[in-house]
Image 1 (cartoon, rainbow, N blue to C red):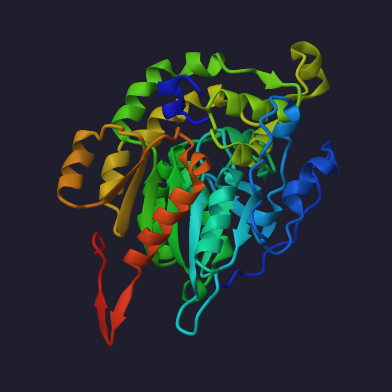
Image 2: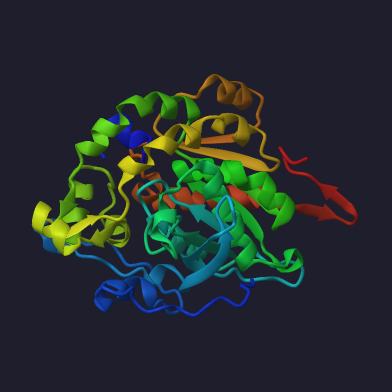
Length: 388
């Protein structure tokens, strides 16, 4: 459930030594984690179901196994404003194929509020397939989402932009501690994740690894800020919980929150958690939202305020991908007329555009990457547009 367009529409390589996969969290059914925890080498993405029967059977959960090389639980210490927090981040990773003179390129994909890294599952599989394995993919469940867990659960509630940006930087430093061995990165963020990537890009470029470009998906500062006044009532109008993951998938598809049933079957289960016995007895639902977005209200304005300026000032190539003809605010309109970023508008998709149209999104991301790769001719470095 994104906090931007959902409100407007009322609908809602070289990878360093990474830790082995952990078993299911205590209290969870191991079968519920099998889909995301045991991921062998990437296979061909599954095809969407052909049945149009409206029963819940067509909304059964699917494993992310074909879309990533591996799922990892990455221990990241020294998080938070005082560097006194510790977490195990759930990371979904497919390494790039390095060349003799390059460590390869990895797309770093940051999801929006309420979603998880698996909202990029279809795009991840297509990026690998369409690039012939040349492109790697790294997506993760951010703080308070999916299967990322903090040593102190109360720390999950801090969803301020500085904290989320710090988390991204700490995770990348943990995964790629030696800059000379790090791959080039393309930062891609959906909605709230776009704000995080725009906030982090210059620091990532300076301190972690070369950044080919930054892509912000379906969030514009002006419209996001306008939507905030009606956000809480719309969140309160959403279902409190569900009888099953299949029921949650069906709700997302039937209400056009996610228009691609295949992607919904992959991503929606990670947006849920089992209800406690007390919650189930009180609500009648066996499954609840993983995150209570109402508690994130103090951070909503901070996510989007200043987003346009950060995006335009990113010291790398920039791309803005929108669902439909969302209007640009003044700063973005001026920057677009000056040719400071590439804009892509995808028709007939909802806010979850990477789920609704994964082929189109993957194709645009690959073209953006290839067009903005570093070019070197002898000792002369040719900078891409926007790079300083």
